[in-house]
Length: 189
Length: 96
Image (cartoon, each protein chain N blue to C red):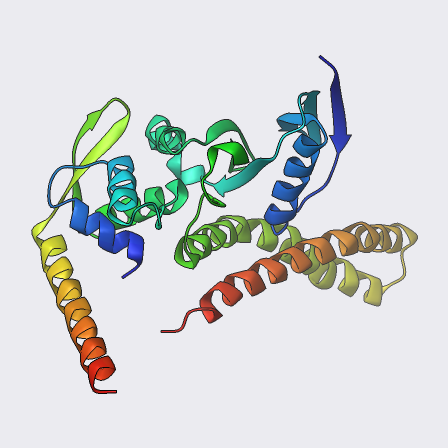
């Protein structure tokens, strides 16, 4: 049985794209066997098939994990693995009478996106606010007081390294926020 | 109240687990409504936290719950609302 690895980077706002990517691989005859590291996806060759892949954000469900997985198993979903707080499930289309997803209403979709935002917000604060405060409150005043090549080098390096990171994090959270709001706006009541 | 929440309260007037409610709703609606596991699991956790249902026992990795007095009150109110909605709809359609 052939195996392959592919590197793909999906942010937490790209859940639907990641699900589609795994389904597309299975359609081409590559069954997903796991994800490791920053985004190394492992596959093994198989018969091409339409299989729906779904991700659930579930770190708080660890306490009742066997019961949680059993609920999915009863509904025909195979549990694959946990990665970065997300649980991966799949179900062949041949076992579905109509299109199925692991969530059947916008309330539960909002609940999941809300949990992702709540749990990952500290990451946003630490990775954006702390270095920014360090730059503005420590490095910049020192540079204003007197030119120092070492300090200038530190400030420039820090800014160059951090700006792309900040952009990715801020864009990811704003997309998540927009998605969360769109689920709310769809409601009629 | 969501559709899933309503069916949970309706089905848990007797001891039941999440999957049995999914099956029950499927049979009731001739397969038209199929509740999903993620939605069901989240709703059960939330309703237990809100005191609408209570955990009774575990059976083969499945938690059995039953409605609480508070859950019964909420269900009764929701049933009244739906009955009124249905009656109003009938009245408007018959007269219109």
